[in-house]
Image (cartoon, rainbow, N blue to C red; front, side, top):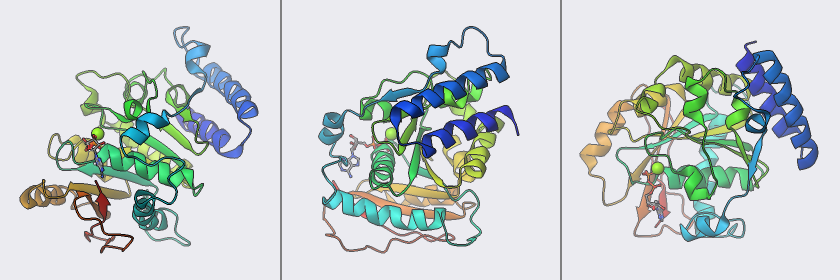
Length: 302
Ligand SMILES: Nc1ncnc2c1ncn2[C@@H]1O[C@H](COP(=O)(O)OP(=O)(O)O)[C@@H](O)[C@H]1O
Ligand SMILES: [Mg+2]
């Protein structure tokens, strides 16, 4: 088992196994120290940097954005996200083998910026984590325009990019635990001109494989770059088991959506969320389909 695999294993196991925050943090620090020893980390990776971070979500910010909050369990939005997450979770955590590789890795993408990738990724992660269905790792992989940490009001410096390009950084260094016990955040990290290229690197591929193989019971949600802005979104889509294509209702032209769909042809499972619809759909299921090349729609209220 590689060192990063061990680090991943320990960090995530500890997060999952303990509910007592203090004990968990103590264990986590111990684990981090062990990793430091085994990696012979340079002095520059100080203990305080390597210690697990815990940040509370700024719920006022989240509420102001019209997103899911702890007190909104019965809202229409909450119900919509229950509908969106159900098939994703069924595919990700099947009773038997459903043949979908890396099914617990879910990429949220769109054709162009502004369609609602981040809105969808965060709401989906909150919906899964708040209802205690599953443990969720939310990864900001839109590294050219990262926004998850800002939207949640969580300060974040290092993240995915640092993990991919700096071997002295371990997984636990860049994870942020939130005040929702089941929700952990991996921010985008330090932006440089090579950031987007790193998403298509072997290191990214290894990370995706490890996340899926070592933690099959965890939902990993990636907020991705838009498919038509750079090639890395489509590359990321090949690393995950399920893709959710967010389409901005009444705004994104059909030919644009079709071009995105053509970029996702090799993906096993692709679903579609029709976002920012003017008309509500009540709590009615709206032809939401998942499967080989099947595209469905889920309306979400703006
Ligand atoms: N269903 C929705 N209801 C209300 N506001 C939304 C919805 N979807 C997206 N938004 C808002 O639209 C803007 C763009 O969404 P965002 O998720 O940042 O897009 P992307 O990540 O695809 O660039 C944000 O201000 C977001 O809060
Ligand atoms: Mg975004």
